[in-house]
Amino acid sequence: MTPLSGTRAEPSFADLVRTRDRGKLKAYVGSAAGVGKTYRMLSEAHALRARGVDVVVGFVETHGRAETAAQVRDLEVIPRRRIEYRGVVLEEMDTEAVIARRPQVALVDELAHTNVPGAGRSKRWEDVVALLDEGISVISAVNVQHFESLNDVIQETLGVTVRETVPDWVVGMADQVVNLDMSAEDLRQRLLDGKIYSADKIPTALNSFFTEQNLATLRELALREVASSVDRSREAIVARDVSPGSRRTVDRVLVGMSSNPDYTARLLRKASRIAGRLNRDWYCVYVQTPAESPERIDATVQRKLVENIQRAQAMGAEVDKVQSENVSGALLRFAREKGVTLIIVGQSRRGWWQRLTRQPVIDSLVGNSDGIDVLVVSLEQE
Amino acid sequence: MARHPAGPPSADERLQEYAVLLAEATAAVSRHLDEVRLPIHILLENHFGQLNENQEEMLASARAAAEAAGLELSRLREIADLDRGALNLRRDRVRVGDLLQALRPQLTADGERAGVEVAVDVLPGLPPVAGDRVRLQEAFDLLLRHLVRHALPGASVAIGARQERSDIVVDVKHGAAPLLDANWALGHRIIGAHGGRIEARDDVVSIVLPAFEGGLR
Figure 1 (cartoon, rainbow over the protein chains, first blue to last red):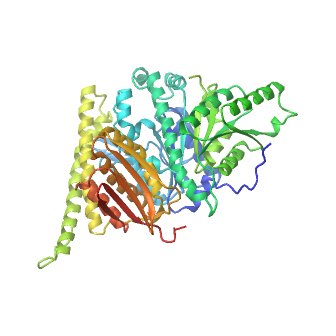
Figure 2: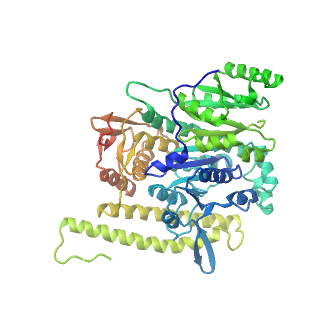
Figure 3: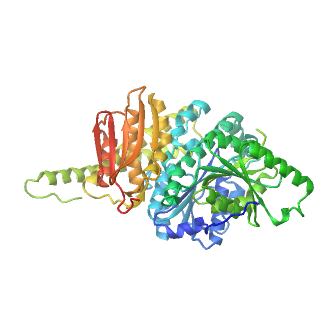
C-alpha cells in the first residue's frame, strides 16, 4: 500500500466558481457528434446543482435525441432569443438574459456555432467569452473538426469542408478539457440505432462523414488536442504550485486501473501509447476499495490484477496502490500530489450508454478534476 | 451621432473625429451586411428544404465572404473604439505562457501553410502581466500569426517569452517584418492599451508588456 500523506483539501469545480472573478471554462471535446458530450454536460449540471451551485442551461441542442432531452429534466433553461425574418423564426441563446440572470455556471452547447446574423455576436464562442467576462463560468462542448487549426487537415484527409470553426485559443484558454473517446464501431452503431441523427440522415452520414476511416482520423486528432491541452496546463500548474525554493514535478499522466481485469490490459496499452506520444512519465494507480481487500477479493480477479500490475510495470508505469472507499477522490488526491495533468480512465463497450450514464466514478472524476484534463477512452478493439 | 465641434479642429480633435466617424460607419455597414447574411444563413440552415451540392457550396462561399467582410469591419471598429477610448479592458492576471500555448496549434498550422517552421518556447514560472485575457489573446493572435504568415518560405520562426527587469518580452525571431494592415494595427493598439509596446530590430520583433505589479517573485 502507498499511503498518501500531507494532502490538502481539494478545490472542486464548485468551489472554484464561487471564488474566481473571471468565469471558468470547461470544454468537452469529442471526436464526432454523438459521443455523449451534451449528455455529459447535463449530468455535470445536475451534480453541480446538487452541491448548491447555481447552474442554468444557456443553450443546449438535443438534436432530437431522446436520451439527451430527458437529461435536461428540471434544470433551469434560459428561454432562447427568437429572431423573426419574413415569417421564418430562428432561435439563438439569449446571452444578455443569461448575464442578467447571473448564474454561477451556464451550459452552452456547440461552441463553434454561427449565430443568426443580427443576433448580436457572430459566433457562439464570442457569447461564451462575454459570459466569462461577466464572471459566469461556462461548460461547453465542441467537436475536434471545428478547431480552426485543423481546417486544412480535415479538408485534406476527410475531404470535408468544415464551415463553422472556433479559434484554437478559445479551447486553449479552458481551465479544463474533458475528452470523450469512442470507437468507430460504437459510434456507427449509435448512428444506426438512430441515437445521433434522424432516420432520413443515417445512410448519408454512414457513407460520408461517419466512415470507419474518418472516425479513426478524428479520434487521432482529438488525442492530439489532449496533448496540446496538457502542454497548456503545464505552465499554469508550475506557476500556481511551485513554492519558493522547491520545484514540483508536473506534467505526468495517471491511469486509473480497476480490479476488473477484462479491459485493463487494453487500457494499459492505450495509456502507454498516449504517455509515449506525450513523452511523459506515467502512473498506474489501483484504488483498492474495502470490497476488494485481500480477504474478500475473488482469487481469479486477484491473480489477474497482479498480472496487470506487472504488465503496467513492464510498460514503464510507476504502479501505486491506494486504499480508499472513494475511488475518484483517491485518484484526484494522488494526481494533485504528483503533479499529474492528464487522467486517463476507460469505459467498456458492453452497455456503453448505461456505463457512461451510471458510472459514478467517472462522473465524479470529471466533475471534480479542476485543472486536470480527463480522457475517457473507449476500450473497444482497435 | 456625435456633435461636430465648432471652429478649426486640432490634430487630436481631428483624430477623435475620424475615430468616431469610422466607428459609426463600420457599425452602419455591419448592419447592412447582416441583412445580406441573414437570408443566406436561413437558406443554409435548410428552412426551405435541402439544397443541392452546388447551391450549398455557392451560398456557403457567399456567407464566408460576408463573414470575412464583417470581421474586417469589426477590426476597424475596434481600432476606432480604442482610439476614442471607448473600449473597456479588464485587468486580470494573465500568463503570457498560457496565451502562447493556446496559440501554438494555430501558429503551427499557419506555418505549415506558409512553408515555415515555427517553434514556441516559454520559460516556466514567468510572472503574469496585468490585462484583459481575451483582448491580449486577440492581440497575440493578430500579431504572431501576422509575423508567421508573412515570413519567408523556409524560415524557422522562433517565438520565446522571457523576463527583462519588470517587463515580460515575447521575441519573434526570423518572422516577417511588420506590415501595416488592420490586423497589425489592432494588435499594436491592444498592446499599447495595456501599457506595452512593440519593438522591431534586425530580424527580431519584440512584444513588451509590463509584469503584473507585485507579481514578481
